[in-house]
Length: 501
Image 1 (tube, helix red, strand yellow):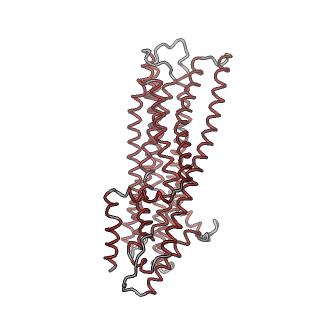
Image 2 (spheres, rainbow, N blue to C red; image 1 turned 90 degrees about the vertical axis):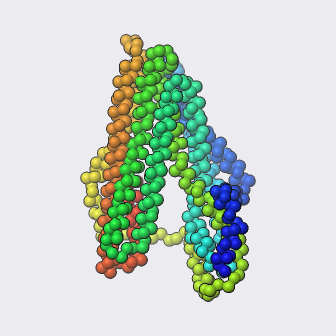
């Protein structure tokens, strides 16, 4: 009877939905968005559009300032009269964009919290009024198990993904309009480079996502707490390799983001100066504007697919909301009413804990023996962390380095003894390439070292936990929780703290 009931529900509610790839499930969630919410979303989209337009505009202002810096003498009265209003305008626009970004976040976050609150309450109320037989069906169990996490992803979809999509699209349009309006000859060359950068970022983000999914799969196997040491070693070795590859990809991505701007400026230094020598481009500042508008815009487009991952849960949430509102009639079940009531109670209690929150866990003091053991175990690869910190420091200095190189290139345009700029530009392009590749290599090395050293430390901690369980000091259930829930965040905290350095 249970199988027949599930089959009837599937045939009535989900067959057509699968044919159109879940769009109807997504449309079902629209009823949880009120008219006032749509108005706030519209305002948030306008603010996100202003953010996307404002970023290339700020780069354009810097280009105007560069033109004054190049062609006017700093000690002249005209220099001060022309550059001071631009500086004040730049500061005012920066403050305005900061305020716009703040109110944009408030709008989308406010709507996300309201919508997810309606979803939670509707699901909880519908499940509460279901018959006990509802909790016997496997589909109900699957939805009840993941609904809280799925609704949290809906929050991320509204508050983060939606404004990111709007900002990226508008920024791309504004960047292309700004660059091609100034000089289409240089813009199409930099545009080809920017497209390649966006595709490279998209590929790296996909590889990082695959490694994250593979890491989650290994963690799920660790929850079963393997009985023998050989099986545990195989899992830990797989996780070490997975974490190292993920760190390597993340470091490659971080280094690539720095390298792209150097490549853009180097391309402009060669081809842009060739255009200037032949009178096909007017201002040297167009080199900076084209590289600093097109490349960040296409890089943001390349990051969009990874931001769209939370949207994949929208059809699932729509199916869950439809399903829970379908009244399950009473049918003869084999299980007793006591067992069914216990399943219902477990769901309601777990769901209620998510709604109201849980009490904070008591942590060990930083001077305790347990904390000292964890810290000593994590510090075994201190020399690798020193090398990785040096690489991070060089990446952090890359912004100042490219600014210094830009200053060196733009200061010789107003020198009367220099008439041909191509050879000077080729020399600066070579310097851009050398520094950019150095920063890129530092990113790859730093990411790989962080990934390997962190995974090695966590591997030793998990081996220690397994030995404690094997000797009877810790129960198997406790080891499962420690391995899957607490050892991973230790690695994450260390990597985040070091990366911020």
